[in-house]
Image 1 (spheres, one colour):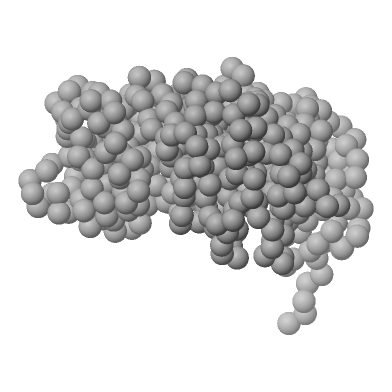
Image 2 (image 1 turned 30 degrees about the horizontal axis):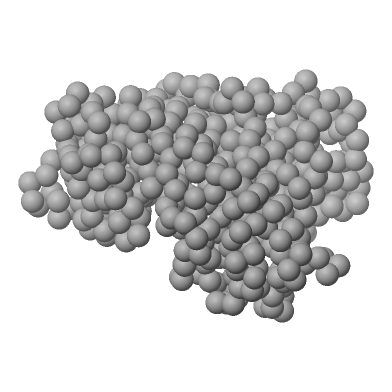
Length: 458
């Protein structure tokens, strides 16, 4: 059988129209039915491209010239945007980002889930979509004998040194700058990933938006951290709101940021913050949403979809540190939260106590095992809320939901593709998706959160 030639060749220059945007933010062009992905190109644009790579079914191209620009194209305000891999769509206006995210959700739900003819609402965005992140995790290295810190260049582990990040809180930028300067002044070495040498691997800065409290975490390769006293004194002098300075030790050759051992060098073990009226204690390794303003928008929507009157029993699968559980507990008769990470459940119990909320119970374990045990004890949920990781719900959990037959399922998702797959599974089991609300938790990136609500078909 003769191999059919591709309609494009590597290094060929072409003029094309961009038809769509991928979930990674690249433009999509078609040449005689053959798909080309073009980073930094936007839908509706007529562009000149150079083909850089071809596979059997699709290829990649570099944007050479914009012949007709999208009305949503803007000049990215970040000076290192084209080198840093932290944001993907700063060249797209914020209005354009919100429209693109709504379209992405609609397309994915139709293509993967076969879900059509339901409301997929306009994306809920931010009035001020900059400086929203309350946590910076900045890799530290060396260049020319000096300590540097920034984010990785796209698709690499090369650190792009930076002074500020426009999606981070200004205090987080300041913390990173202060630690870099102190390290350079006292000869504290940055980490060399290839040779597994040096002391300082990461600086993690956390900011309580409502409380103003700040935590600084210094992630080191070993126990040794020279000039600790000077570090502590100078961080306190430069960052007046600092409440906690922590050392985390990670001796492994790994891309994982944190190691298993954490020591408080100065101050408190926790800082605090609020989402709505709920107060949270946040430790160095606690999972806590990085955009508290939009987290409240997301959880308010989940609460609205749960339709609680004060009489309901609710199960919160994948409950984490109890953020959604505690929101639900304000309106439910009783909430049961389950999470596989023991530290998260310890945080959840602490947060319930901190807020004087007693109508919640938390359990450590796999939701698909704990929930049937609860069911055997006579617990009958009216509503089940799930907020799984990117890989979505385990099939065993979806089966458990179908067996427990709650009136309503509220699905909070950070991945439209696995959301679509899981909604399809639940629909095949007798539920109907009523509506989906996209929420923009991460402006200028391609990530999109959603809240969906399903009800049992009668």
